[in-house]
Length: 73
Image 1 (tube, one colour):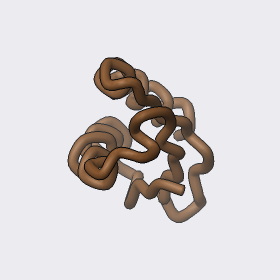
Image 2: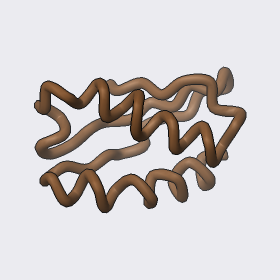
Image 3: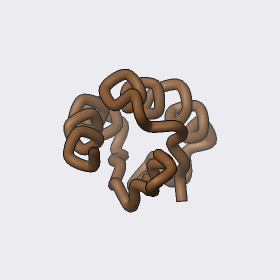
Image 4: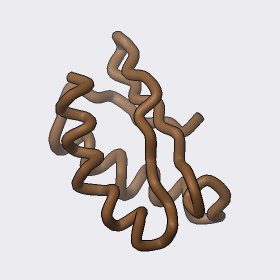
């Protein structure tokens, strides 16, 4: 599952990098929770929670349906 999540993140990264940010996959729990670290400009952006839920989480769930939630740490 981790490999498929990384593949989904590759689709998101260009958009994040265009704004000076990035994302790192930290952990995938047995319960289907994906833990990510937003980096660069994304780490301190006031819109990062919206980016996480409406962008990154949506794409990951679309690509890997067994993912239940995506959280930033």
